[in-house]
Image 1 (cartoon, protein in one colour):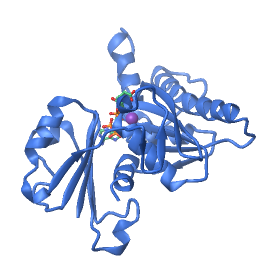
Image 2 (image 1 turned 90 degrees about the horizontal axis):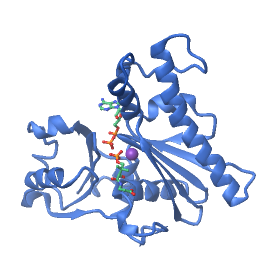
Image 3 (image 1 turned 180 degrees about the vertical axis):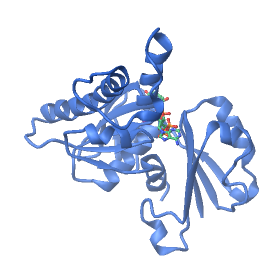
Image 4 (image 1 turned 45 degrees about the vertical axis):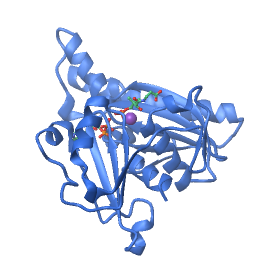
Length: 252
Ligand SMILES: Nc1ncnc2c1ncn2[C@@H]1O[C@H](COP(=O)(O)OP(=O)(O)O)[C@@H](O)[C@H]1O
Ligand SMILES: CC(C)(COP(=O)(O)O)[C@@H](O)C(=O)NCCC(=O)O
Ligand SMILES: [K+]
């Protein structure tokens, strides 16, 4: 049994891979998985507390304090704990980041998962979490580089916090129109257009760089993806828990 953990800046996602269950070795076919917010985790909700495993693989982009908190939750029954880091070459992917280890481990894991799932396609990998990251991966398994933007919720929140008259719209990210006729719809539509627009622009730009008439496939994941995908007008595949799948592929 392997325990996989993806600690992002909003939520901690986890999954168990059980090699005894044949179907469990397929990417994402986990017998148990879930997520907790940082607040839930800090107040003692540790989903893997009672579990036994042979090893643990963690991707953490949420800082040292969370790493220390995570460390305290592991005991000998969890087995050897490894902290996943981006490297120059790993699991079929080469990493063109200037300093490969500086690339967010969640971005590297997502790229590994996307390339494993779609090995013959040029890809734009968009992970829509606290931040929205948009990365280019070639069909040959080269991580070219990418973009980091505020995530959907951060974007909307910063408008509400830094303006006198704009309300918080966090709970209502469910519709977008091109030219809204009231404030709430205007904020939602603006933020969704910025997110979807950035992704679409990356897809078209990558096609241009590749000199390809066929658009790369957009692989999209993350907690905010479900709000953004209805606005996308490029080919995409929504894959839940892409980072965990990357950790699974990287630790086979
Ligand atoms: N139940 C939820 N709790 C928290 N965030 C959610 C929830 N449902 C959707 N979201 C959206 O998902 C984002 C967090 O996505 P996630 O992929 O978990 O991020 P991260 O990897 O940065 O922790 C939030 O910013 C918010 O826009
Ligand atoms: C960009 C990120 C903050 C995204 O974090 P997330 O939205 O998944 O919580 C994370 O991948 C990160 O801290 N990256 C390090 C810098 C880099 O990738 O260049
Ligand atoms: K992200």
